[in-house]
Image 1 (cartoon, rainbow, N blue to C red):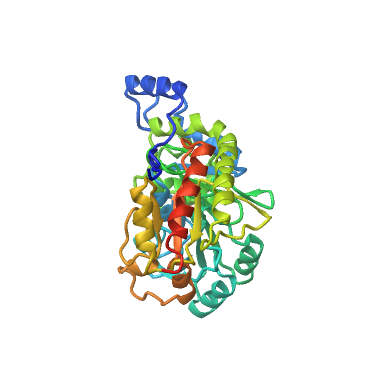
Image 2 (image 1 turned 90 degrees about the horizontal axis):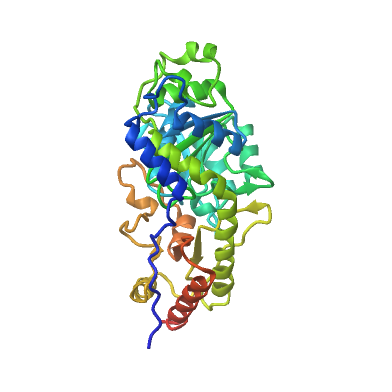
Length: 399
């Protein structure tokens, strides 16, 4: 009998019971909006901002409706205006170029290397050729590039670095948390990220002017003083009437869900990495698969794993993915011509005016496969998954 994996790849762990009890209290109060509080009460959203700023090691934090909204607000608050060119690594998910486009910017896509990092030489070349002075860096699928080199280029060319940390909440580079290298960072708490509030986002920065503009843009001309981890009143007086209101405030219910899970994050990072290690060990011995070379400075969060099916090639990979699906595995392939299963390649973003060829990125993505690692999987489950992938891959080597 052919072995089949039976657990769903989209099943998250349950919300803590204490959070469920607190959720009922909030629902019974009817005070879901962050500015709808009783006398003397501090909103869940404001408490979240204070706690996440302290956890991240940032002066300021803003709770927002989604990671994508955080990106748009970060770009606007950093001074990006309509028609501004913004560098972005080409291996990312659609909300990243989507945020640039929605905010009126023009994405300038940068090549990646064989380990799914931003290609440092191409970053410099594109920055110099385009004149772009913003870089929206996506730490896609938790792969942290050489941050020393990136920061050096951004400093030299006076480029504003904005970090998309949707996949690196809890990760570090040389002991510094991901998100603390640029002028501003954005995080997601969408269901499949490292904290689950259904949808949600966070923005962190040490720049007081940017923070004040972000707060106002998120939806507050008058109630900004009720936020947590914000600049002083004099900063708001300089900026509050200069920023558009986009109504992207996070509600108290989801803020509470994030607060309840934040103390669990460090241990969850350890648990994800245990599962990643099992999969990495199992897949590294499979003929025809190539796993990334992880840099020793990178303390990543193994909530997903990527590999290249180099021994199969793009013409055989669809059959391989389908065979794995028939055995219960949800493998995403970045080489498909059409976007599917939350996966898309840069050339499917046809709303961009001038899509570059990006031969290096295209070659890497042609064999790139992606696998989610939910914490509902055990280490034995990960061994089983690696075994199925190995069988289906080696069955097709040389096809």
